[in-house]
Amino acid sequence: MQSNGTIRIAVQRSGRLSEGSLDLLKNMGLQFETYQNRLFTRCRNESLDILFLRDDDIPEYVQNGTADLGIVGSNLLDESGAKVERMLSLDFGFCTLAIAVPEQSNYKSIADLSGKKIATSYPQTLKRYLADNKVDAEVIVLKGCVEIAPALQVADAICDLVSTGSTLRTNRLKVLEVVSKSQATLICTPNRSGGKKELIDRLLLRANGVLEAGAFKYIMFNLPEKRLKDAKVLVPGCDSPTVIPLADPQMVAVHSVVEEERFWEVVEKIKGCGGSGILVSPIEKFIR
Ligand code: ATP
Ligand code: ZN
Image (cartoon, rainbow, N blue to C red; front, side, top):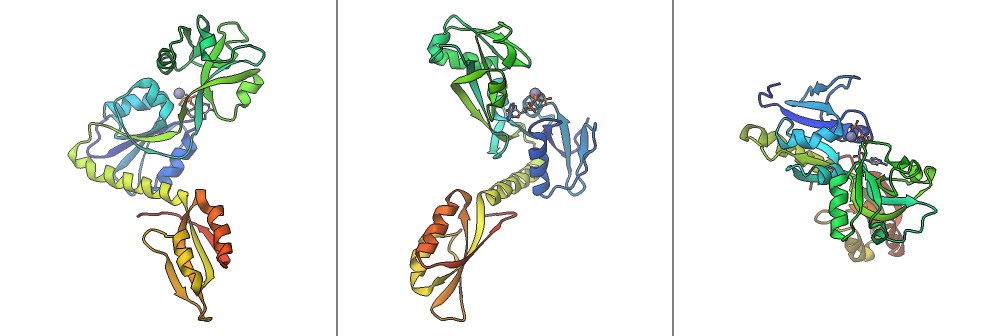
């Protein structure tokens, strides 16, 4: 398949990262249809194809330049060792690669697994972790259903991805150690050719804008004019908040942005400054 200057972005075809990946691309302003069983789709408004692949293949495709960009869990990047550029952590697909043992076992720490068997689909990452912790355990490689290995007496422990922990509980396992934390990551090929660079850079800017928007809220409130100095410290915005006079000369309206993480703390402090009529709305895109 020749690319003819068209950018290719690889996303997971069907799985935990598919929905988040397509949502991101749509929020980046890309217009496309998705059909079941299609392996790629062409964007209507940009010179861009979306490839639908198994997530395991994405690091390799991006490394060799078959795809220019890709969305994949950082757990797979750590495991594959693919030489790709990690451009952005995407704030979805959160999970933890953890070592888990049977609930009833007496293992207290990773050191207790010396001489034991650990089943995993992430042998490279696990071997590195064991070596770093000077633990000599046998690594059993399984492609899937790792969580039943202890019950089948194939292994004493497992090293697998965990999000809520419900799969572990169902299989009467508990986390012993966290090996690494993962989330969906936007990756880029190291073989960026000149003609494509401009569109890739534009797409990266847009992806950043979508992520920044999710991390902020737009906030508006009324405030006694004499407390404006305090409020400016609380909601500095990008450069400075917008301040609008009100009919009552002793009051002003303040418009700004606030980090989602600090939101409640800031609202409480605004109230403490005599703020009222606090309105908050989501931001669709945010370009600094
Ligand atoms: P594929 O058919 O594409 O190979 P898969 O079965 O390998 O699919 P999924 O189970 O859909 O893949 O997981 C894809 C990615 O989702 C993982 O690599 C990881 O980054 C992320 N993820 C988030 N939560 C979990 C979880 N609880 N278990 C497994 N993966 C998770
Ligand atoms: Zn996979």
